Image 1: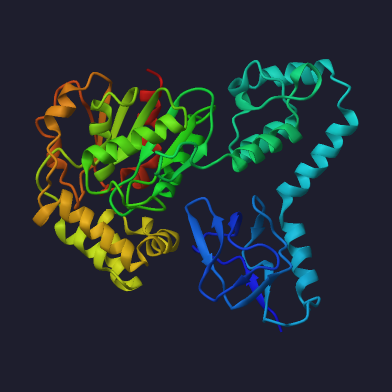
Image 2 (image 1 turned 90 degrees about the vertical axis):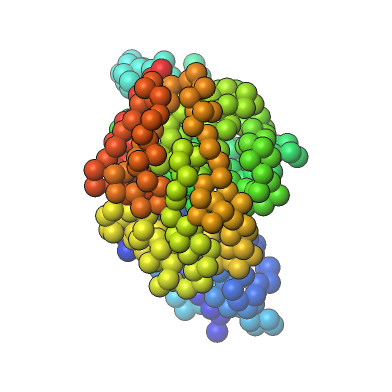
Length: 444
């Protein structure tokens, strides 16, 4: 009997997930425990392992599809086992079809557009221009809905309808083109990166903290969207060297890390950007902004390293040694003042990042290089004072990792924002407020 491959629940609030990658195709052989596919929720991207050894068959959900938790999305057959119609395969497909409202709606909208494309009424012409966030763009209501749901900036979509009107098919084609684009356009741009959203206006570049990864910016990105600040905004998150899916080649050198970050911006054709960075990433952002390798329009630093000598060495060391879920959960709790923010999804994402012994060893070397014996090696206060662009520093008053006292003595032109009941992660615990602060930077 074949083994079901189901879409798992990775946090308590999760009801559905989007398939973002398959590591095996129809007919491929896999071994139990090997990465099989990636799913994306509103909080994280997770790698799901094969539940059995065998041959992958009857994949029912492709890349880009959103399906409910518990849906059977494929089967794994034992070697030599005859292909059959599994008893629950048809109901599973029906369940997925009933639940995937967006996919059905898109297909119906596309069919309707095809049937009615020649006619453009005065009412639709006026309605298309009434949308404040897409002024001057002609797009059907269905195209706008799909673009909103899939985080596609309409300004970057070429319309194929009358007078350049953007249809549902145009948005989907743009989305597919982005998915098929090479992840690394230049050989020297080695760091993994993720466009949370592409946009034709400003670009926000996000640098995470120690032991985190690019997807950790999703809660803040969602807060920007909720506040209406993400319209036509490009949001690029980068995995630091030795973190996430980035190689560790440049991880132990500040200069080489800055060069690697600049290479990504060059490869992604980011001519100018607004930087937002957290913790260890904050120190790197200061160095990048001062390097003249990037045209940084503004700098938003969240509990940054590099502004003082002290830090919680026990926390840094604990993360690199936490081999089990219970120990890891205890250390993660140190990040926040409000324990509810360390939910199942947060823990699962961190556990996936730190599950590999080689990855933990790499992070330990990074910690020993930049935080030897629990003292910060990087002193960037003078560098920060020399920057000409607008700088804002955000800190939680209950930060146990990087003391808020590090803000004392900063230049008067550096705006400071302190949050009382917040720990080391204001972008999570006070996401709406941090989004508004970034919004002020984007208006400059």
